Structures are given as C-alpha cells and as structure tokens.
Image (cartoon, rainbow, N blue to C red; front, side, top):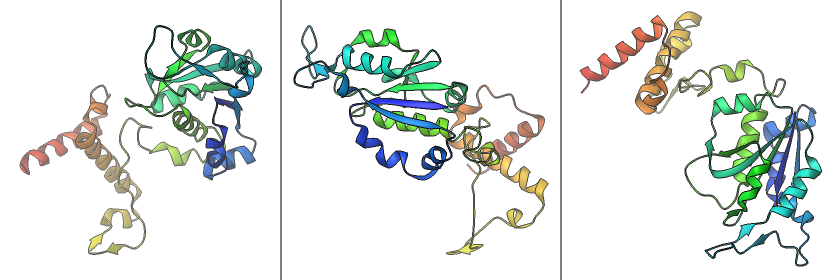
Length: 243
C-alpha cells in the first residue's frame, strides 16, 4: 500500500513517520508513506498557495493550482484521493477497513480558512475526524494514516486487533497486568484462573457492560447472539437493582 500526504507543512510529519508502528511498517516496506509539499508547485511569484476569498470574508483560501498540480504529480490510475475537510463524513473503524482495500491513497491537508471549492471535483471523498475545527488537516491525515496502516497485514499481528475497541462493534474490555494488587485494588480472579472459556465470557460481559454505559448508541443496530442478549439483560437488571 502507498499513502501520499499533500501538505504545506511536511515537517509536521517527521516524528510521525519515524516513530513506533508507522516507522516499523515503513522499514519493513509494508506501507510506503510519502509527504509532498504542494507549496513547491505554486506559480505565485511570492510562493503563496492561498488568496483572499472572492466576495469577501474572513481568512485565506487555498488555491486550486498548487494543490491540483501536486496531486497530478503523484496520482496514478489506482489512486483514491481523500480531502481532509471538517464537512466530510466522520472517520471511523469501518471506514479504515474500507480504505484498507485501496492500493494507493492520497490525502490532501487543508489549512487556513479552507479550500477553493473546485478542488472537491478532483477527489473521491471528503473525510473529517470529528465535529471540531483544527488549524489544518495534518493531524487528521495522521489519524487516518495510522488507523489504516496498523490494519495492513504484517504491520502488527492480526490477533492484536481482534478485540480492540470498535473492531467487533463493542468497546474493549478492561485490561490488567502486574502487579496482581496495587493500592488495595486487585486484578479480577477470573483473569488469573487460566480458564480460557471463563475468561472469554468475562471479557465479553465487560465489553457489553462498558459499551452499554458509555456508548449505548453502538448497540442500537447490533445483531446480538443469544449469549450477548442474556448478558445484556443481566447487566440492565443489576443496574436497576443498584439505583
């Protein structure tokens, strides 16, 4: 897989590209992640990539020419082009899996007040990482790149992602490690029992409980197994008893 990020602040990605899982994926040549500076493509004599908006208004708007010329320099017939935009569809784990099917992804990072609207005609989709405004699209591009990269086969073990939050539609169960007791708080006995089936049931129960308490919206359209329905009924009953 190749991911190319278009930005006017390539220095923001230096730490991101050379740290942790992203660094390992690049060193193994599993994922090729490149950063392109679209300021280098401007034809403005002052090296600008933005201008005042027609019709007036606050802030500066990124121009078509530098971004689209940069895009054309890296785009191939297999490229899937993403525009980071707060008005785009909200990114989630399902979208990360969808993008995993692409061989070549290009992510455009905005800055300033926004983009010339015509840029949207040259992209395949627009993505937001949440209902808030950032200084630019660089942080969002890092989020999307990280979420996709860790799913690529060979980057991390498949077993490491199976039970993660959102992978199975539930929040992840609580995790514990040494010491067994700290400040009077003990690790649940079932996790020390070595009984794999009991541990599985405990973790499923805790995932359902955590999701019901913190993100009940995730359960609205879930197709529950018989086991999950029984557990959820028990969770609701105990919550009523404790009120």
